[in-house]
Image (tube, rainbow, N blue to C red; front, top):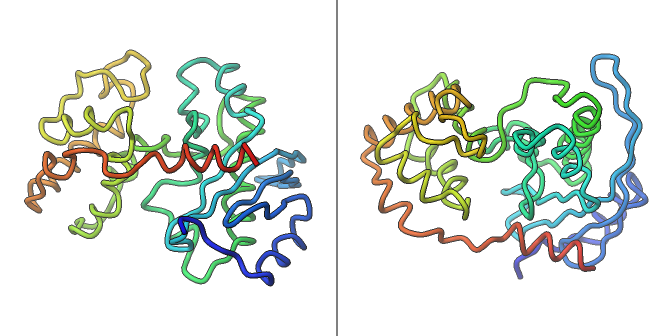
Length: 251
C-alpha cells in the first residue's frame, strides 16, 4: 500500500471541519476547500477545488496537494513566465507548502489532517489568491522546490550534519527535470550558468540567495565527504507527485 489509510474517526473529524472535502479512496481527499482567512488585517474569502494524496509514511512526510482547476497556472501566466515558480507550484508536481527544512516546524509531531489543512493548505491558497490579484505573496517566501531549499540553507545558523543534508538532498535528486544540473553544481558550482527557474538569467544574478546556499551546500558536502556523483547516480524515486496528481484528478 502506497497511501495512508485513515480511520473512520479521522475521516469523520476532517469532514466535520471541511464538509465539502470527500474521502474518495485510500489516502485520497478531493473536493472544495472554502476558507475565510485574515493576514495582517487583510481578509480573503475564497474556495478552491483541490486534491490531497497522503503517502503511506504520513505523518513523517507531508501529503501532496493539488490545485485541480489550474488557478495557480492561470495566475502564473497572468504575471509572466518567471512567476511560474514564484507561484509555488509546478505542473504535475503539486503546490509547494513550505521548504523541506521547515516541515517539522510547520507540521510538528502529533499533528493531524485538520492541523495540516488549517496551518499549511489554507495559508497557501490564501497566498495564491493574493498572488492572483497583486503578482506577489503577502509574506516573505522562499522559492519553489530546490531553489527554496538552497535559499533556506544559505540562512542556516548551525553547522549542518550528514543527517541534515540527508533530509534535503532528495529534493534535488527527485527533480526529474533538473537533477543533472543540480549534480553538476554540487560537483563544481558556477553562478554563471542559467538559473534553474528558466528565466534565462545567470544563477547568481537571478536568485542570489539560492546561489549563496549552493556554495554553502557544496562546502558542506566536501566537509562531510559526501560524493555528489554517488548520490546523484540516477533519480531513484519515481515521479510520485505526478502519479498522485493523476490519482486525485481522475477519481
